[in-house]
Length: 281
Image: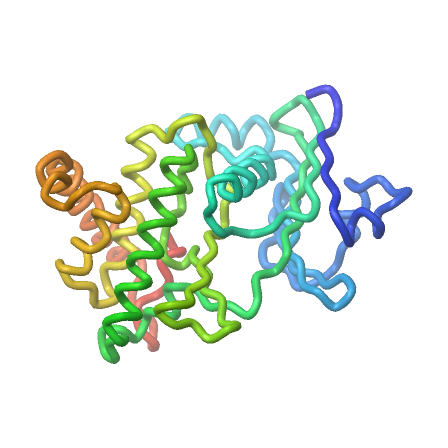
């Protein structure tokens, strides 16, 4: 990559006219959500509207090597999120809207990149929305509608060649305007900085996403029948056929979700208000 890749929509197209966007994005101020040497995430406002800004400054060869030696794929910049947003939009999965993206530098260890997305508000994460379900079960129609919506979105995402790599229910945001109802649900998938985009999602990565999703929903009071509702919508096949053809996968998901849950319980004791967020993993 010898030259910069740049996309600017309003209001940043006008705001940064005549300026170097890679300098201008560093000057944005607001509420800091993450501040690391190589990455910064903040919420800012322009013209009374909220935006989330993620700036990547290059992780260095040492960090890249450390990730590879532990069999992890390093996040090298904002390009992952940019590509995932575009692909999800193409395949009809609601997500964030990017209004600015820039990437420059051929060296992956020092590449400078950023992405700015419109704030999704008012919203609530699906994790928070479902937190009290074990004590106060929702109306069945609402629960079934949410299961259908999540299954449809997950299926489209994976068939569209995207795997998330942090696929927990906390990364689904539910729109609150208008008030959610079984007939009117607006869910968006967020936090795509680790996502991968290909022509086809490898089964290994699809299965990791499904295990993470299952694990993150273990404590919200879902029944076996609820899980069986998810499967034909996600796979777009009949349930009997799925139970025969995907039996090995279903056993694997059960085992992997159990492993993640045991690891979670070992590392994080519940707080005063209940189980901590799955994002702690």
